[in-house]
Length: 81
Image (cartoon, rainbow, N blue to C red; front, side):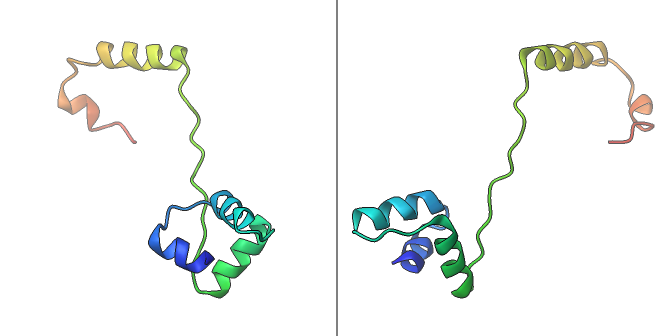
């Protein structure tokens, strides 16, 4: 059931699988699901957590963009991103 569910919807989370199996009457842990998927040749991964911008950071970015809006292209050639 685990492999079939993940094959149909690859974005299924381990928590969703745990809940589905509990409703079916089987108690499993997230580690068990990961091990089962790994044995079947499927990889599991977690989405990267990205820090949210605070309003202060948004205002600072906007201020920088407005200050450098009319800069010539030659100035931007020396910027390392």
